[in-house]
Image 1 (spheres, rainbow, N blue to C red):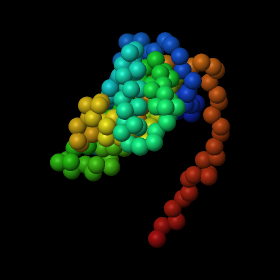
Image 2 (image 1 turned 90 degrees about the horizontal axis):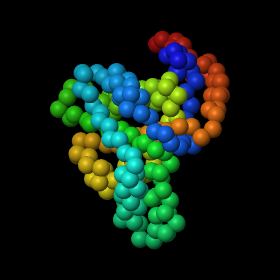
Image 3 (image 1 turned 60 degrees about the vertical axis):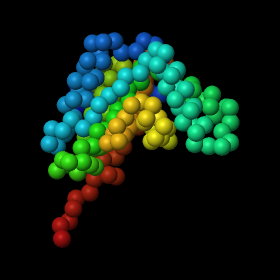
Length: 187
């Protein structure tokens, strides 16, 4: 698949099953991520892979975080939290590592990690791997961050769910470029 095809036709794939990407495919995913735009070459990212029984442990961490944050959490909500990581055979937690001592603004460092995330999604699509970028309140939860071993200068910006698409990929809806691009008239 060529680059323009991947850019123009990538879609989120929320329904995933086994198998997960193999070792060679994962290597390409992360090599693509490492080519993201990176002002100052800070490499302000790192990635955690979660699969197998570790997904169940992440689900338990999610349930603990929810229970710690609310007095009246339902058992149904805890069951749902525990099941979240089981929606794909492989999860990749994308972590932005903001280096405060750098001349590069923190926002640019987080954006660079976002670009690395997008590169993984494009590389997955190019290889026929289903993928979806998820976050939600648990991605920004201090208990979850601590459980995943994040340092104080780190933040989760994505949890990528990867696997084999359960059904044929949808075609992305065409968008009119003119709805989003305008010439600047100057001052």
